[in-house]
Length: 262
Length: 300
Ligand SMILES: Cc1cc2nc3c(=O)[nH]c(=O)nc-3n(C[C@H](O)[C@H](O)[C@H](O)COP(=O)(O)OP(=O)(O)OC[C@H]3O[C@@H](n4cnc5c(N)ncnc54)[C@H](O)[C@@H]3O)c2cc1C
Ligand SMILES: Cc1cc2nc3c(=O)[nH]c(=O)nc-3n(C[C@H](O)[C@H](O)[C@H](O)COP(=O)(O)O)c2cc1C
Ligand code: FES
Image 1 (cartoon, each protein chain N blue to C red):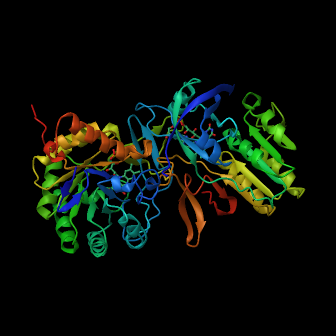
Image 2: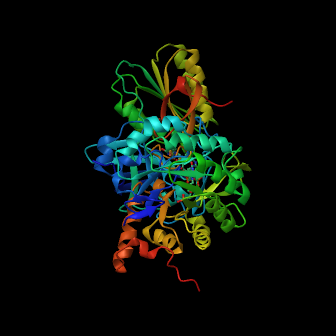
Image 3: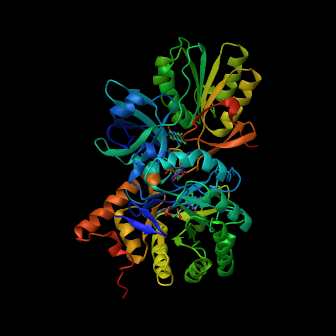
């Protein structure tokens, strides 16, 4: 059996915050195979405006309805074209691609840390974890950008929102909340996704408190499947470091493997 | 659909462009690699290379810029770990080599000549490495010299891959042929740049990179046509091939085979679709042998 790209019908579409689109598509194959942390590589246009596919994380799946949900921010040409599609349209998707967060049951006290568009893959993760006590700290720029609050509330025993300007929830960065939590020693694994400076911070705090963490990296991609070697990221190896690839070796890595350039 | 390139028979004229298809493993999960005429692998160097810093790709109108910088595990690793995998298929194996010095090219040609590959493509045109590559490909004298030198060590047919970043492609192609090239492939990427106007920084960490995709196709077709008028050796044409029609255009211009590059990123089945499109063009026009369209453009 060869892998293939899927032509998927859009079953739902909603703007849930300014420029943030919540989209659902129907695909039995993707819904059945998807694991938390994996992504879809989406063809946004059939013309020459956005030739390359755009990587977007899987946010949630409904296995019964064969529905796959992803949420994206309109940033440039590709996501603008994708946002212009309507319910009933078909989009060409490769996936699920990449590595997933580990779901080992030995981690009973997970902490999920998301920043901005990085919160999306964490929802499926929160739903997939079998642990009883899931904590999630989600950071946004301001009150208007807060999304998925209800969804996370349903599956997490503790949930806090942080905004940079304090217009909603805790004022400051999620990493400050995280440090408080780790100090209490009630966390045995941290799962993170968000902008690079945040991930770097997560990594160093986890190191200080000796808690393992898994982080999801971002990089511009060409093929999305490991063939073009475009999406390089620095990973520790026997000979100091090597470039691995976000699309195939990642996007999820163990924090202690990743080298953030100064 | 069989095509002969320098004494090697390909099942059909569709080849993967170096650097866009890895060593075949990833796309092999999407289709049967036996359907390809040839697989040209990721550019190899004598010793392993990490490549350039990311970001290594930027999108531009109808094209992309890349600055991978030849990340690869080295020629010896390739021979040991990748050739046995590729040999399982009927597609011909084309090893693509880049060096910093003439000696490095010669050593690689020697190592590969003793391995189970079919053809060697000498990349003298990579715009993404500071030391060598492009420096060899832009001067007729050096092209002639490096081809002659490498030929002495090369027991497999040698394809010389030309850089489009030159003023007279005919002169360069002639120099490669005179130096002993068994075939010529073109084009490699064109040197380009893209700037983020908000941050005022180039998008690529390397500042500049190689442009390919539909944006470069007219330049590539023109160069294939010009080169076909001055050399007798077969030409492998590439640059922006997305469909069977594009492949036909290159063959009419004078290419005996074609290579598919970034189209693979867009659609993992791009090579198969190019092949099918080519077949259907022949069928529609009642042409039984693909060779009949090579160089059959009728200039005004
Ligand atoms: C593994 C992974 C998961 C992602 N998940 C999500 C998600 O769930 N929701 C979401 O809103 N965004 C996500 N992103 C970021 C998203 O891919 C980019 O915002 C998007 O590609 C921008 O495309 P554009 O055409 O709108 O922007 P443009 O800036 O016009 O894009 C130009 C080129 O740059 C690339 N590019 C630009 N920004 C990024 C970026 N941050 N990461 C990777 N490539 C980029 C594009 O793919 C394209 O090739 C994810 C990125 C990765 C790598
Ligand atoms: C990501 C990428 C990596 C490449 N790496 C190589 C390489 O290692 N060696 C080489 O000879 N050409 C390399 N090329 C050039 C291609 O083989 C081809 O000449 C060029 O992309 C034009 O074809 P296209 O427009 O169909 O992509 C690379 C191109 C891309 C896009
Ligand atoms: S995008 Fe091609 S290797 Fe990752």
